[in-house]
Amino acid sequence: MAAKQLKCRECGTEYALEARYVCSKCFGPLEVGYDHPKITDVGEVRRRIQGGPQNIWRYHDFLPLEGPQPRTRTGLPAGCTPLIRADRLAERLGLGEVWVKNDAHNPTHSFKDRVVSVAATRARELGFDTLACASTGNLANSVAAHGAALGMDSYVLIPADLEEQKQLATAIYGTNLVKVRGNYDDVNRLCTELSGDRENWAFVNINMRPYYSEGSKTVAFEIAEQLGWELPDRCVVPIASGSLYTKIAKGFQEFIDVGLIDGEVPTMNGAQATGCSPVATAFRDGKDFCRPVKPSTIAKSLAIGNPADGPYALDLARATGGAIDMVSDDEIRAGIRLLAETTGIFTETAGGVTTAVLAKLAESGEIGSDERVVVVITGEGLKTLDAVRDSFTAHEVDPTIDSFEAAFAESAESARI
Ligand SMILES: *Cc1c(COP(=O)(O)O)cnc(C)c1O
Ligand SMILES: [Zn+2]
Image (cartoon, rainbow, N blue to C red; front, side, top):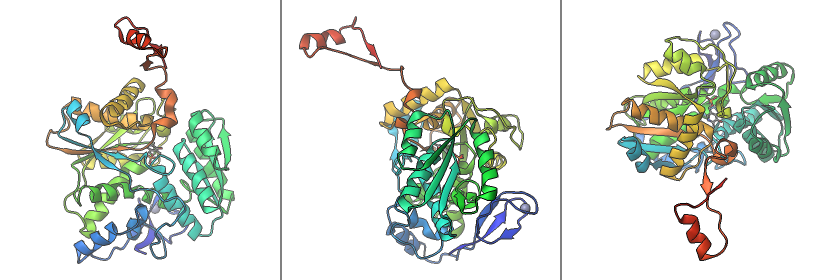
């Protein structure tokens, strides 16, 4: 495999590719390092990728896994989600070219299937028998489903107040669902303690975190491939821990470095909810670290008050000429509606955050009319129905023409749904 070692992001100390996530010298986070052979025949490599399986394993050479590329590595292959040109959304916002990367089209309806596929596959390779995670919701769905598909036990820890839809869509897979009385940061602290003495458990976003986060690069690989091996000018990406946001940039950079695409990493815009905006606040205040917050927002999948990759997200926004913005819960609801009404895509609250930030950037004139923008939609609207409940009307009629016509007369009463 091209992955060669785990490497400390702070001091550069190298470690073997095992289940380890912090540097024992400086406590910095570890990341997978690669030694890619220089590509001499770009066309041949592009064709090989295009001829690969219709899932993230087509990018096997860029992922930290052993063995040859199987058609399907786990029973639940992720990725190859649609990239849709959204002309009506662009027009509404006065923009030139907008694309929606719709990652709701994954086995458990969020981008988390990408990261869990990689972490779970690596966990198997390293001999673990149990998957576990601390989750804000979507990760819970994905870990439980991958456990079922791979025949591994799973333990999924969530904040007790999580959306009911996400709890049901986790429990159905026969996992050990643990509702922790506390917020995500409390759950994460508990899992970090547990991971110290549960030797056969692979906590996908703790001791397996370096592998987990590599899965997010595949969003960038797909965008480049779907744009005909070209780069967008700008990406708008939601931020919880900051892993997805920073790894999308890493994905573009790796494809540029090996010569598969030309150009530079796009302008990277991060999106947070005002009710949990440690990274956006630090960006606004010119800080290079994040002050932890107590989350209070309808965007629960983004509600991480102490984001692990916060400082790297701040660096990335500044290095690419981007920004990290925040939007209120009302703006999030408006974002969900805007996307639905102009594209036919119903996203969860996190996608509302992303769309609302896109709208904000368009309004402020930040985005040029000649720019090609990709908006990353990370999850499915049916999982967060409560966020939009009571905000629409419907016509309730008797099964007669008269009643139908009366309903559409100007004075018609409407039923709230
Ligand atoms: C987890 C998640 C994110 C972002 O997570 P990061 O921790 O920043 O990688 C974005 N959207 C949805 C729907 C998620 O579930
Ligand atoms: Zn270190």
